[in-house]
Length: 187
Image 1 (cartoon, rainbow, N blue to C red):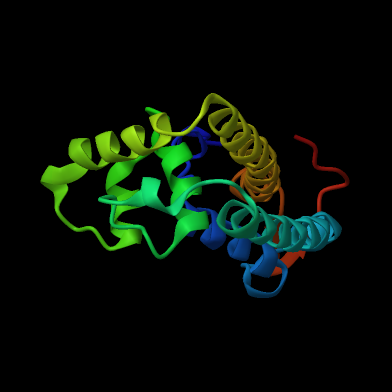
Image 2 (tube, rainbow, N blue to C red; image 1 turned 30 degrees about the vertical axis):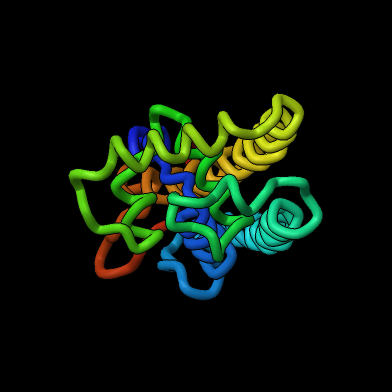
């Protein structure tokens, strides 16, 4: 199982929404094979958790936008004056060196690849313009959510990877045109 894509997981606002919707809809839209039924309860539980995370994520964005003391004027010259909550979330995430800024900018509608460093600097300046208390609160809320989101994503990928691994190891055998299930299959 390859975990490299998880280590490079996209963490911007739109990518998090896409990932949560993928996890939530997997029990209905996902590929179902011989082993899916063994893990169906886990996928259903993760779908429920994903729905809860989605609600919590929207609540976090709403808090960042309306009830928090993040000033709108700090967003000037960032091009994100209208999407304050999502903008502050993306600003906090953009400070991570691992953040793929090209994906973040593409999701925000900025398509100039030469502006990646300049865009990161604009976000860094906006965050540095906040008070220490505002920075601490922003980072605490955003990164606390992201750590839990990454845990859910890793669990989802682990279960999907387990099913793929069982399939790949040919645990099902075909004899005389009939599938024979092994007496046990463990990873």
